[in-house]
Image (cartoon, rainbow, N blue to C red):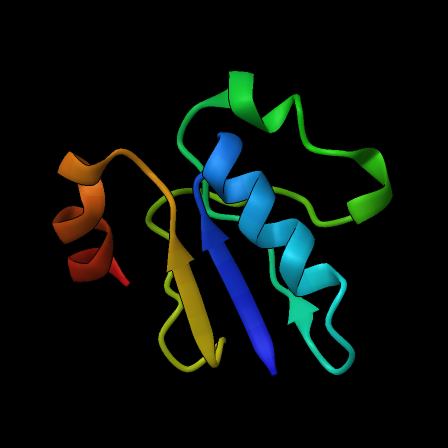
Amino acid sequence: MRAAVVGAGVFGRHHATKYLRQPGVTLTPLPIRALKPAAKLPRSWAVPPSPIGAKLLGRVDLVSICSPAGTHAEIVARS
C-alpha cells in the first residue's frame, strides 16, 4: 500500500511513524506547507517533503490528513 501523510507536526509524524513500521506500506513524499515542522522529520525517513498542492489521487492508496482542522477541506479539494 502507498500511504501519504499531510502535515509534519506531532500528529503527522506519529502517523508517518506508524506507516513506516507496517510491512508492505510505502510512505510517499509528505505534502507540507511549513518548513519548520519539516525540519523535524527524521533524516532516516528519506522521504523528501513536497508542496502542499501535490496531487495525491492515483499516487496513493491511503492518506492521513494531519494538518490544522481548518485546512482539511482545502487539502482534499487540491488532491
